[in-house]
Structure formats: structure tokens, C-alpha cells
Length: 245
Ligand SMILES: O=P(O)(O)O[C@H]1O[C@H](CO)[C@@H](O)[C@H]1O
Ligand SMILES: O=c1cc[nH]c(=O)[nH]1
Image (tube, rainbow, N blue to C red; front, top):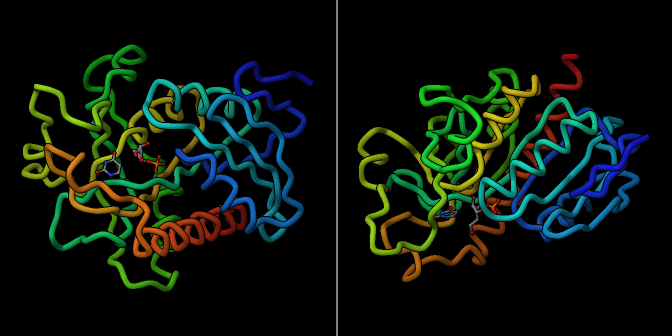
């Protein structure tokens, strides 16, 4: 048995499947849907629960905001024995066709953050595992809710509130990217490097632009409902994937 130094979880408590999310409160929300849920650790921003969904053992861990800290979480989960990781996040929309409350399953992420440049060369893709992405998309379509469900490209940035440099939202929007968040590229690269598989689904919380400070409110009823829906989709995907194994 060994202890992961940052997450503070033991390998003997690991499971093949993990759901990851930024917010420790969301991790707790997800854990309430599990059977036999128990908290394993709350270390820094990383809160981990273990439980079961339809008999499949699963971990739920929060990874905080930003790629560098999130990558620590993904690495330690994989070292502990996790083989499949699903991120359940929030993101800003780049399209009027996908308003707040919609769900986007990320097939691949643009690596517009800094962390993965320290891990792999330029040109290395941040791509989701096709089985995980397809299971997530199918499970999301089976959930009930008002928003649109789409599958496509997302972009991961390090910047949230703009400084003096322009945040490149416009060019990613023009290039057909559906949504912007901060950690999927790190998840997909770390999973690929370490031989794990990963997928991600995000609930849109509004339109992204260069000055998020003016508009950003992820605490609306519409977003809460979409988060509830994506949690159900992620749990449904875990059950589907475990059934295929
Ligand atoms: O809702 P989460 O999972 O944290 O995801 C998004 O929200 C945070 C920004 O508020 C960033 O972590 C971004 O990726
Ligand atoms: O990174 C993020 C997360 C949520 N909403 C955004 O606009 N950006």
C-alpha cells in the first residue's frame, strides 16, 4: 500500500474509474449519487470520495482551477491505479447556438495553456479517448434537460480574467472551437502519456469574451441544472464503459 503524497489517498482505496471536477463542493455533490460513498481525503484543493455506481467502484476527486494543479491530481490518480478519468466541468460558450445550460463533450482540446508545453512537444495532441468520449456523448443524450448536447473541440487556457494582453477567444471561436475552460488539455495529455484513457463533459455557464469579470456567474439555476445533468451523464458513461469491459 502506498500513500499519494498530494492527494493523500492510498493505492488500496483506488478504483479503475474516476470522475474529476474543479470544485471540491461539486465532488461532494457527485459523491451523494454514489452507493457506499465515503470521503478518503481532503488535502489542499483535492477532495476525494470513493463509492459505487451500479456496482462499479469509482473515485471522485476535485482538482481545483488551472492546469498545473489539476495535472498533479490526474498524475496521482493514475499512479494510484485509476485507468479511466472523466472530467465534469464548466466552460464558457463560443456559440449563440449553445447558450448557458448546454452540455459540450470534448473530443479534443486545444493546448493553449502552459503546463503541457513542459510535458510534451508542440504538435502533440490533447485528444480524448474515443470510447470514453462516445460513451459520455451517448449518456448525455439520454439525460433529460433543456440545453443542447454537442460533441466537439474545446480550448484550455491558463488565463481567466484578462490582463493587458488580449485573450484569444475570437480566433478559437473562428476556428470552430465550441467552448473554453482550463484543464481538459492537461487531462488528455497526462492520460495519453501515462497510458490511461480520459474524456470530459462541460456545462456552459455563459458566453466567453475578453472581459469575463463583467459577466461571469456560474451560480445560476440554469447552470446548476446543467451540472446535475452532466454528473448523471458521467455516471451513466462509467456504467456503460464498465459494461463494455
Ligand atoms: O468548473 P470547473 O471544473 O472548475 O471548470 C472551470 O471553472 C473554473 C473557472 O471558474 C476553471 O477550473 C474552469 O476550467
Ligand atoms: O474557464 C472558464 C470556465 C467557465 N466559464 C468560462 O467562461 N471560462
